[in-house]
Amino acid sequence: MPGRSLLLSAALAITAAVPVLGAGPAGAATPPAGKPADLGRQTLPANDGWASAGTGTTGGAAAPASNIHVVTDRAGLAAALASPGPRVIYVKGVIDVDKSCADFATGGYTLAGYLAAYDPAVWGRDTEPSGPMEDARAASAAAQTKYIKLKVPSNTTIVGLPGATIRHVNLHVDKADNVIIRNIRFEDSADCFPQWDPTDGAEGNWNSLYDNISVTGSTHVWIDHNSFTDADNPDSNQPVYFGRPYQVHDGQADITNASDFVTVSWNKFSDHDKTMLIGSTNNPANDRGKLSVTVHHNEFSGNLQRLPRVRFGKVHVYNNYYQVPDAEPFEYALGVGVESQIYAENNYFRLSRSVDPADLLYNWGGTTLTAKGNLLRVGGKEQPIDLVAAYNAKYDPDLGADAGWTPTLHTGIDPAETVRREVSRHAGAGEIH
Image 1: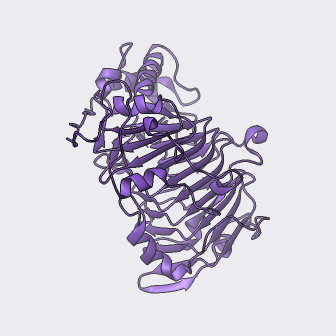
Image 2: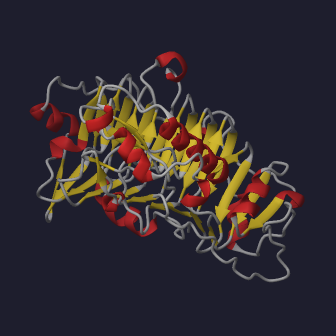
C-alpha cells in the first residue's frame, strides 16, 4: 500500500550468554538451552510426506556450532542466510523492515498518477500498461523486491523461538535443496506497487508479487507449524480501483517452477485470498513429473481459494481442517488444474449454511481427483462427503474419481472426525509438542 509505513520493530533484549545477529556481520551464537535448540536440530520424520522421499529433509541439522545464528532484525536474517552452510537460524522477536513504500518509490511513481494513466476509460482494456508510469512502477517494485525478498539457500533450518514473527518479508527458497522452516508467524508480505492488467480475466485484475514463502525450483522442503496472516492489512480492507479489488498480496506458501518433494504440515492459514499455489503455469515443459507435495494437518480459516490449487503434481491433501464461514467471498478449496493428481483424504470441511459443498472443488483444466474419507459439517451435523460427486452434480464436464496413484509416503492418517479437534489445538506457530 503506497505510503504505508513498514517500521522496524525494536530488537528484544537477550542475555549476554547468547550472541545475536543484528545489523552487523553474521556471527556464531549458542542457541538457548532446551526446546528451541531441539527444534533447530530436528529433521523431518521418515515417511512424513513427499519431502521425506530419497535423501529426506534435514535442513541445517548438521551445522557446526559456528553456523548457528540467532537473529532479531532483517539485516541479521539476511546476513545469516548468506553465511556458510549448513546453517540453523533462530528467529527471535519480530523481524520487520525499516523502510516504507515511499522509500521504494522511484522514477516519479505515484498511485494517483498510475490510476490516471491506466484508467480503462483512457487506456482501454485490450493491452497491458506500458510507458513512463508503468516503467516507474516496475522500477519501484524492483527496489522493494531487492530489499524484502530474502533468498534461502540449501541446507538451512529457520526456526522461530517463542513468539517469533517475520513481517513484510518474502522468504524465497530458490533453486535450493534441503530446507526447513518452522514455528514462525508470517505477516503481511504486501506489495507496494501492484500492477494493473486489463487483459487478466474478463474484467482485468490487480496482480502482486510477494508470498510469505515462495518455493521455486527447489527440492526437499519442509514447512511446518507456522502461522500465516495478513494481520492488520487484510485483503478484505483493500480499495477497489477500475472495478477490481486492489490486490496487494499474492500467496502465503506457493510451490512452483518444477519444485519437488515438499511437505506442508501443521500450519495455520487465515483470512487470505490466494493461499497456496502448486504449479504456476500450464506449460508442462518443466513441471510435468515434478511438484510432488504433501499437505497435511493444516488449518485453513476464512481463506478464499487455492487450498491448494494444483497443476501437474501428485499432491496428497489429508487431515486438513477447512473453515468456510461465508459464501460471498469464498471461491473454492481445491483447484484441479492441468494434469493435476490430487488425492484428498480424511479432510474435515466446516461450512456455513450459505456455502454450497459443490464449490469445494474448482476445475482449472484438470480431469480427475481422488477423494475418500472426507467429512462435512454444516451447522451441528457431520456427514461424509464425496467431493467429486458433489461437484459433478452441479458442474460440467464431470471430473473423474481416480487420480491414478495411491500415496505411500505418509505417517498415520487420522480419522476425519478427529481432525477438527487435533488440528485446531496443535497447528500453527507455538504449538510444536
